Image 1: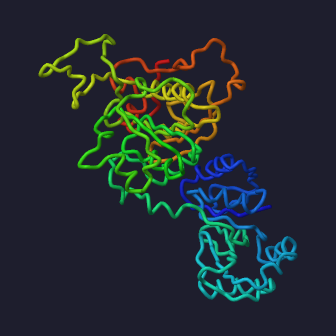
Image 2: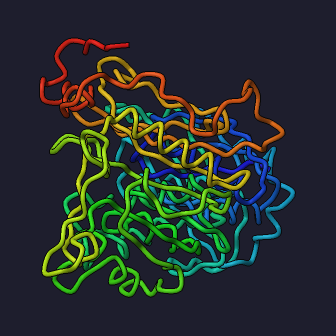
Image 3: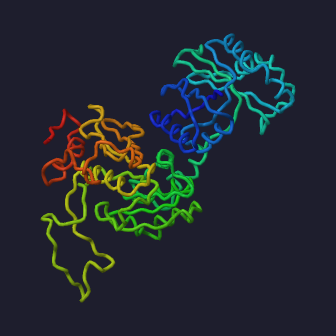
Length: 442
């Protein structure tokens, strides 16, 4: 059966991957019959109405889904297509209360124009009461126009099946959140990321760069159990009476919160076994300050320092030594950690920065032999972008071209040097204004 999906016209490169991820999560086959990132209308084929409701119920980047009754480039074509497709079911809606809507993209229709369009559908023979609030059935006319052209290039007509979860954005907006920082992930993109990673009841999700917990909140909203860690103990412990746990209390999601702890990815006190259903993170890009990892610059151990007779590293306000860390090394470490800890079919959703002028830019999209690339979504800014990369843990039986290779994949291209710019080509290009192409030291 064919359905029309009405998208919100935002984050265009994320919309199709979100629907594909949700279809896989619900075990539903979906065929994209007509899709363009420049249009808010998408035609898909789904098994039935229940599959359509399941698919759209969790979607953040759509507004609703409609049973497609017809389409055409003119209203004469549209009416002819409606008769051909649906004349046999008109009687099913003959006495139901109903209303009509007109949604025009890139053009404005006056009330009199909308009324004329609606009256052209009188042949449907609906005799039930018209109810503008809570009708039994809602029918919608969709016009897709080019800017500045009043005549539509495509027209659709459909029966409303179900709305999406886009309404929750007001609940989770950062403007109302009790504990956040300047780097807290936007709630809309956090929820979309959770969808791409298949957060769901009965699953365990981890964020190794947890910050103020935006991703944990998003995953818990969809029913997952969550935990997180961060090298910055101040973010984990909270401030001014607020903490990550405060956000879970605010949204009544306490049952989805397991714990957070202070650690960096390379020293996480987690067993290296396959127990995570998902990993979701937005690691630091090292722009404001260079990336750091626990350890000393010379790699050697240090003598224990004592303060008031107690080892300094056991005291509450202890700050462990840190050393510079490369961005590419960090990305490879994240994939290695995911390969070690994700169950088969578990997903990693990872954000990474890149320059705009060279496509993917100077940072290659990281790969791992045990992780399958599922989707790449792009959020563009002025001269740079960030990409949301989603991977899926392969079954061991499906892993190819891996002979006596350690699970922590070797780093293919780590910049030489010790300074923040030498270790992070993206940071260097950021402060250069992305002029020219960075020189690599492969």
